[in-house]
Image (tube, rainbow, N blue to C red):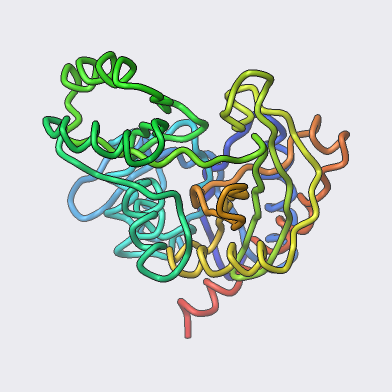
Length: 304
């Protein structure tokens, strides 16, 4: 019988099934068993226990949740509740923080990390939006405070574009605008992966011709990149500030101000897909090893 039993919910597309099997194999070597496919969407909670596919979640020694594309409000609600009783990677507080772009940028800026200039204002405060559009050189980016993969981002370059966006926002249940100054950059970015404070990898994305979004899901192209010491240090500091055990820190280089800028901190940075590995992106083994070490570390800390 294994010393520890943990739960896993890891995405299965894009090579995720292979990643999961590699993690399970390494865990078994360390006397840690894993129950897979514990999707909290299928869970119920009653009489002091959260049940998921017949498993009492609070009786697990740890839960590793790693699936960006299938999170619902119900799952997140149970994620938050479960986090009070067993270790979760990433913990709910850190994960929910980095899901909110305003809160993340606010935290980073207050701790000396440069992010794009931003403004959060009430949905009816159109005057402020017009003012900052003018002050920021006529180019701003509207971002939903939550979301991933570049979804919902809108580039606003004049009052007419702003006038078109405002009615859309007012017909949703959003109570605020979050906008950032558009950064003059070369349409490429850097993604630096960190696990438990350890540098794992660096690669980049390039926006398609005529676009400015670098996200792969928005048509971005993979770039093999080597990081500078400055980039790695920035990524480590950002991950530590947010509290994420596993983080992907997205950065660009501001050509006007000649400095690196942190755009986002991602709590579920993807592994390299089989297609990306064929292009030379080779960090999965290192990341799997670091995650297994992290799981074992968390289990030992729990049982001290």
